[in-house]
Length: 81
Image (cartoon, rainbow, N blue to C red; front, side, top):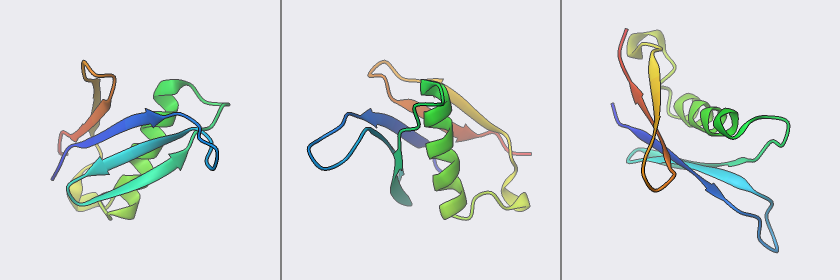
């Protein structure tokens, strides 16, 4: 299992605000949802990546813990079952 990091990416001329979720196994971009809190957006981005990678299967456990790094990125680690 790998840690997932997420970071906010501001809007550009082409894309709106989004959250980048990444780990060694893959990356995805989640469109920022203004109806959610900042933490909610980071959590959703991580959950979408977890689902994309198939890590939401029961054999992996569902206890993900979140922290925030000094540079502002959020980190998610699986604590097991």
